[in-house]
Amino acid sequence: MDSQLSTRIMKSVDANFDRQVDFLAALVGCASLRGDEEPAQDLMQTAMTEAGLAIDRWRLDEKELCSLRGYSPVETPYDGVSNVAGVWRPRGRKGRSLILNGHVDVVPAGPLDKWTSPPFAARIADGWMYGRGAADMKGGVSAMVFALEALRCAGLRPAAEVAVHSVVEEECTGNGALACIARGYRADAVLIPEPRNGAVTSAQLGVMWLRVTVRGRPAHVREAQIGANAIEAAFPLMAALHRLEAEWNAPSRRHPAFAGLDHPINFNLGRIAGGDWPSSVPAWCVLEIRVAVYPNQSLDDAKAEIESCLRKAGGDAISVEYHGFMAEGYELINADAPLGVLERAHAAAGGGELARVPTTACTDARFYGLYGGMPSLVYGPRGAAIHGFDERVELESLRTVTQAIALFVAEWCGVEAA
Ligand SMILES: [Zn+2]
Image 1 (cartoon, rainbow, N blue to C red):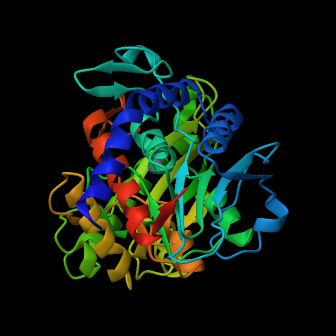
Image 2: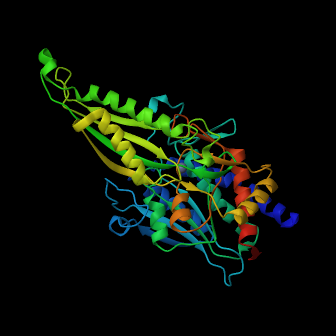
Image 3: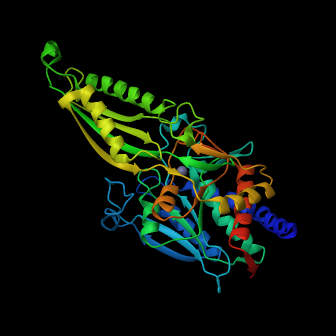
C-alpha cells in the first residue's frame, strides 16, 4: 500500500479516536454479564449502522445449534439473547472478504469492593481505561467498528465483503460464534481483536468445564466417624487432577506450539459448594472445574483420562457431568497470506515486528478455523488484569491496533473511493 494512503487511513483513526474512547466507555458501562447482553448489542447495532453497515440481528436458538460440531451445552436458556452482524457489501467484489469478530459478554466482577473504582463505570488514568470488559474484549470490539468508521471518514470503502460479528457467549460456551457459522457466514480470513498485547496468536488451547458431584453420608458431628464427609473427600480429587495436569504439562506431552511454555495446561477449581450445616457431616459437595487440552488432543480422549483419574481418587462416590465449554484447541495454519498483510499493517501502524505467540486460553477463533475452514487471526491491544480486579486496556495500544486493523482491511479487501 502506498504511504500516502496508509497515512490518510491512520490519520482518520486518530481523528475519531476520542469518539472511539467514548464509545468504549459506554460499552463498558453496559454490564453485559450472561443474560444481560442486549443493551451492549443495541450499542453495537447503532455504531455499526453509523459506520455504514447493514444489520443482521438474530436470536440464538439452542435447538438449532445443539446438533452442530463445536456446540457446548448451556444451562440457562437463550431468552432473547442475540448476535449482531454488521455487513458491508461492495457493488462489485474485487478483493478478499473478511470477518471481524468480537464478543460483548463479560465475566462477573465481584467482590466489588476490591476494585479501585466501580467495574462498570469506565475510568481513565495514566493512559489506561479501567473497567470489566475494557480489555476482554470491548477495547478490541471498538477497534473493529472504528477501523471501518475510519475508512468511511477517509472517503474509502472496502472492495470486498466485510462482516463484523458482535457475539455473545464467548466466555462460557462459544455458541455465539457457532451461531455465526450456522448462519452461513464465510470469508477469506477472520480477525478477532482479543487482548493480545500486539501479538498474533499462533495456537490456542481447548477448554472443558466439568462438574464433579461428591456424595457423602450425613451424620451428627458427635458421631462423625459413622458419616462420610463429602467436602473433605473433594480434596484428594483436586490433588489427583493436579497430578494429571503435571503429566500433560511434561515436555514429552506438550504440543509443539506450546513447547516454549513451562505450564500451558491449567486445571482450575473455579467454584465449589457443599454441605448444609456446620454441625452435620456434609452429604454433598459440587466442584466446578475448568481443564485445558492441546490442539492435537481429542476431547473424548481427554474426558476419558480425566474421568479415570477422578474414579481412581474418588471411586463410586463421584459423578461427572459437562456443562459450558466443550472447546477444541486450534492452531493457526495455512494463514501465510493474511499473516503477511497483518505484519505489514502492524508495522505501518508503529507496532514494530509482529510476534507469534501461543495462548493458554481459548477464543472464538476455533469456530471459524476448525468448522468454517477460514484462517482466523487473533490480534489485539494490550490489556491487564483480565478477569481480575481493575481490568484495563492501554489506550495507545488500542489506537495502534485500530490503525493496524484499518490498514489490514485496506490491503486485504482493497479499498475504493466512496
Ligand atoms: Zn475474550
